[in-house]
Length: 357
Image (cartoon, rainbow, N blue to C red; front, top):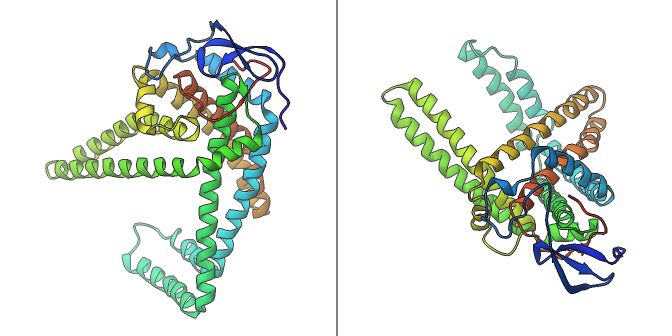
């Protein structure tokens, strides 16, 4: 059971603009106004503008400090997720091997070196030969082996996707609770992530449908323009894709974060309210977080690729083990942006014994 913090003034969980007194076991009715030097706290989604965001330096240092202050629950969450993730990945791999063996690998190995400018007949011959190997293997499998292999791949894929969603929500639970001067342990965060799994999945599918619809519109416009100029169609299509991604990315991330930790309101509507009048500041911070996370992940991939030359299992474990800090830091930073915009934390958490910002 989590040890309760000592009696003191903490940020009021019902109103982040003021402090409230915690007597060591429960909240009292004593309140006092709160002032912050690093950023202006938003009272409600959509109020204010870019001033709701803390400075870039405060965002980066605060992210690191929050991780170190909550390292134990974050590492426990990551360890649980890593075990489940590796189990799901192993199920996918075994199911794939049972169904296809090395036939698809051989197909890729032979097609990859083929010169794209080579004679089409040569490429067709390679494809036909290797594809016949694939179909011969599938026809030679018993129905039970085929069904079991496909089931293992499907279950493993679902487990991998689901546990990544739970991890995202659990990290957000810990981060936003701490930013609100409260705390949530690993078990509570994982339970909250599991409870919100279906909601996050639903929001993700909705965003995917919207994105596909936008791409269809872009393709249609580019197709019409291509009747006049192929080069213009390519440029216009690329520009429209960048606009769609740029406009949608902050809204999509905030909607997913709302589904992960926020109140029981429509996630897209709530995210739009958070983003109102703070779009550019939010986009800039999200791009910075993404770039820094990518830069920290590249060395991990390089090390894993080198180890993969000797042992595939060791390479997979290395990727999972070394990815912990980029994943944790980026999640904390994104949820800090959500918090600074006035995003609420809807799940129960106890007050924290020390400030996080």
